[in-house]
Image (cartoon, rainbow, N blue to C red; front, top):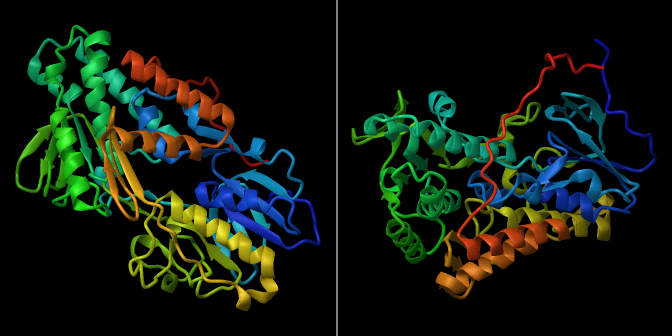
Length: 437
């Protein structure tokens, strides 16, 4: 088979290939518009996904389009930025070639911003038996699974058999698990009695399983306890110091020998990064994060930079690397662009080292309930919830998306309802074909 290329225009400008259109990759590419470089941005999707609100898509509170933004719309007027929908397969450092599933591309510099994926800790069975929440597609699939099982439960007269369909287990007590558990509790309280009045909402049990003794690890333990209290009052069964060891025949097996009957297990127990084929093993730290210096440069290759979740940068303040959330990714991308603009790649010795500015962390549990940890003080309750709403609205890309999300939130707040509970199943009559051109 002929070696394919990504059909990019020839140029005398240095070519920077950006792998991944998450917070880091998209921020970097946007800041490089109009600069004397050819920027090639590729991702497996043709859109940017706003990951913090995936759980609201899964809970039918938002449509996928309202938290996604087309990449080509972002760069419509950018003559030096080129978009390619492709997945990286490997890097040839000697030849300076990136191999993708759609063809190969040469580079002068690479920015790896591939983000993180769900960590199943090497347990393939749990991976196959659980539902993830790391993409819009997974959020839609989770929404379908929940609504489908409610529909099926209406046709099951046996209480015991219904439990596997309507009970839900969430594994992982981080922000995703806490926010998902709170949203499910509100769905149980406000939506089920109206849409599924033939079901007794009291039969629905929501479990949040956390391996440690605190929810929201990384935040002030007091905030973790507040979030736990919120969830318990909302009816969520919070299990601390508990571990899932196996899943068999709709039963979740716990380390202490107990079991929970549930067909739907949502895995939010941590993240890891995908290995990049072609990079030597000595580049990797825990969770497959790539070790970089203080300017986000790969230690073994001066032409490769790593941003965001995939980067492990050790510092005095962060001996275990920066948290794998949006803010470090965005700040690293902006800092890298500033260094490039000011000194160019020819004078990297003059680049300033990156220093993370922690703006705070937050999580929402439900209506009027949130916790916010700021550098100098903490907030809880209604004001924390308002801050959470404002920060996430501001971070969304596109005025239209912000307006749609804001309207949905206002509507949901006053009506105690969401109007997006559709079971959308992909359907095609076309046979699978070879994508090779």
